[in-house]
Length: 174
Image 1: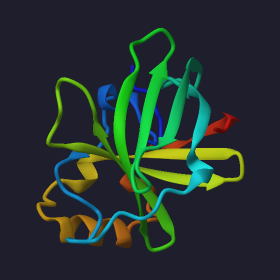
Image 2: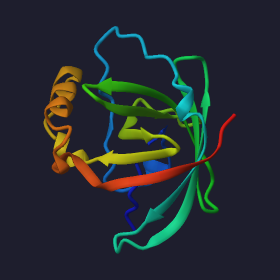
Image 3: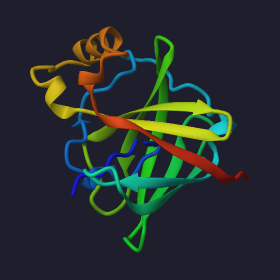
Image 4: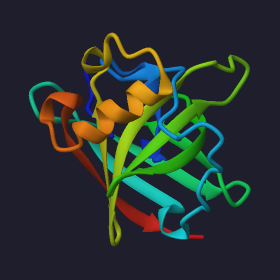
């Protein structure tokens, strides 16, 4: 069953059991320009978020929560939990691409990865909307510069995304 999230990201999330979701864009490439320092944490992303995940038939299949914390002023710690599944934990960096925000979610734990997930995030007050990127859209992209350029050129192209925006609601803040 394919679930549409949206990072995460936190985010970020979000961010999130995304590693187990079919179609997610997982890469070793980075959106941030080489040598760029990560932006400072935006406290508006920190807190507990609740998402209602839908299956391929657009039916709510499970609830998920994302707990987002300021880790060190530049990175977020995100714990994503779907239903009764084991939580997944991520180191997350948010970055701007033009007027959009993307989250780079690197899994934490015994199986540290050289790759991370990229998702788009949009914060609107107490609503956090996440949208997965479609891995097939990025076939042939082999450098960080190519990745950033392709994302910049396709911010509003639905073909770049896997499914619709997934809305989350803020349930508490630290």
